[in-house]
Each structure stands twice: as structure tokens, then as C-alpha cells.
Length: 198
Image (tube, rainbow, N blue to C red; front, top):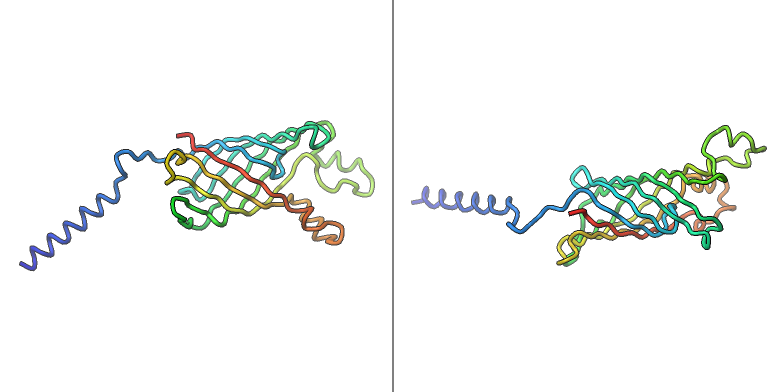
């Protein structure tokens, strides 16, 4: 009798576990590929891009094109950027939302235009190290968070994120001369939304 009860209990656990390991028949896993739109963040006023999630959604990598209109920046400026974001911690579940409260990453961007230069040969033309950094190439580091809507009906494909970051040259300049640059001039806020492609 005891053996029969133990066998039935073990069978029940195995069936339950098997059932949990299988997704619902109507469930479709989200695509690792996504499109995104972003406001600010050292890549123009607005930018759009495409990217991919990897390492079990612990890393995202995307390519974006940003635009800063003449009415805002004085010139119409286009920028292209390669960006990687880490999501190192498990999300916190808040009702139907998944909140990744810590994300961090880096971005390398290139700004197009005759007034921007990237190479050492151009930097050496200016006396007294007037330009110490490339004006076309920029490295941007940031930290922030992300909210996924995967359990919200009709919004399963969407995520929203926020970031606070600074260009690498600003960080170096601040370390060298903290009185000249205030923290408010260094850090930039970025807001964005992503949509999975399936």
C-alpha cells in the first residue's frame, strides 16, 4: 500500500512538472529581434533602430540612426550608434509588469558632417590641444532600467526603458576639472520603447 501511494505521488509530481515545462498551446515565445525608438541619449533628439537579445535576455545589442533637427541643434545632424545593454539581475514582478531595475551598458556612435572629425591627424591641426577628443566618434556609458509588458494583453511585444548616461569625454573632463563641468551638464536622460518582431 505504501509503495502504491509513493508511486502515485511520484507519478503525480512528474506529470505536474512535465505540464509546467510545456508552454500553453496558445503561447508564442517572443522573437529575440526587436525594433526600438528612443528620445535623446546622445544619439540625436530622436532615433530608431533594430537589435537582438542574447544570453537568455541578459544582453541586448542594437544599431540605431539618430536625428537632431536644425531647430534644436543649429544644424541638422545624423548619428549612427552601436549599443549594448546588460540586464544582469532578475526582474521584479509588479502585477502584470516585469521591472528590470538595473541595466547598464555602453554605446559607440559616429556623427556625420564636415565639421566633425574622428582621427588623430585632424586633432593635431589644432594648437594647444584645443580639441582633445574626436568630435565624430563618441563613447557613451549609461545605467537605467526596463519595464516589460509580456503579461499585459495586447502589449506583450512591448518594453519601455529609461537611462541616465554620460559621454566618455565628459566624464574624463569632469575628473580633470570638476569645477568647470557640473554634474547636470554631464549626464543625459534617455527614454525609449522596444517592440519584439513577433
